[in-house]
Image 1: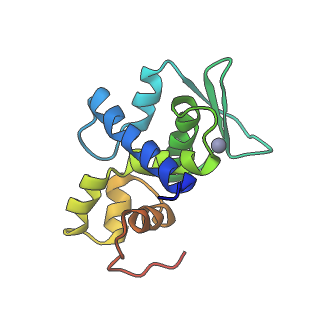
Image 2: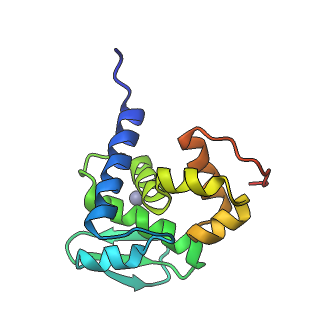
Length: 149
Ligand SMILES: [Zn+2]
């Protein structure tokens, strides 16, 4: 069988998040991402960054992040936490996957999808609609409601 780095990275990044949620006692949405980050002793500092929306400083264990909406902030915080948790050779995309899986666990989304529209789901999970749609595509689900990107 052929080795597929992206898919393999996806599986690992996603599997990691399941254990992480258990480890931090997170059992409901919206996932308390800032609490998880605080549990690792990582500080979050809001700052008007020029080069990126957010970045992780490994030396000082600090996530610097631009001021932004809570929904976007949560996704970027998840991404930067990915840089801390995932092995350093992981691709940037894996950090996005890590964040999406952490904020929107597979089983939860599956259960919730039956009882709510995408707009409501995005509200429940406190994520942006584009991020929610990407997550549904990852899981292999087509959304019932069409929302423009
Ligand atoms: Zn990154």
